[in-house]
Length: 241
Ligand code: ADP
Image (cartoon, rainbow, N blue to C red; front, top):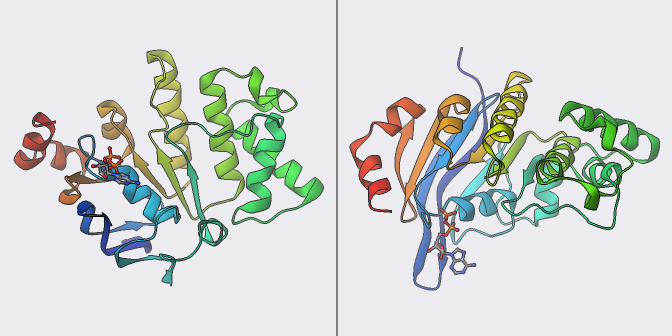
């Protein structure tokens, strides 16, 4: 059975002056799917994530979430509408405890919980990502992977319709990487709809149902990891990197 479409990117462009960082890109993401956005450095992947989350406004084109037009709206409204994200450079709030960081996601995300309910929900997300024991610690006391877990728990606490992971696995050592891949796999098993930007090929192969491949702002391929990674144009784009 075909899953319904949750997010639709239609003819989206983002120009910075004369530079076409994203140029007429279209794709859609189905419910419960893990969609990878891959491509060489500078191909427009992060710009695409910023367009979906509302950090950037497209120069042209539309992005819809559950048939609601979200492009052009402020990032906080898009977050409320159900787009959760983590950032390429981890952005925990350093003055707050672990649980407070995650509660921020419950309060400001799609879920909109308050007080004790937000705290309980946040505690569940911490358990979910494997650091329930760290709830009361200041985030400054955490290791790098645990900071990443906090960020992931915060995004999950908003109960997003679509979760954006921007190189969530970057900077992890080989052991942590395996742990991280298993964690994201488990989110997929939960039925989350995920869009991830990733460079780690093992992760792309084992996590993504489909991938969009970008090069110089343009979508050059779309399909399963096996399909796109054997595509001649994709191989050429990576070798030219
Ligand atoms: P990727 O994530 O694939 O490495 P980016 O989306 O970060 O690529 O960047 C795509 C292109 O857009 C690059 O040439 C980059 O220098 C440019 N770019 C990204 N953000 C800006 C910006 N705010 N202003 C000007 N150019 C930008």
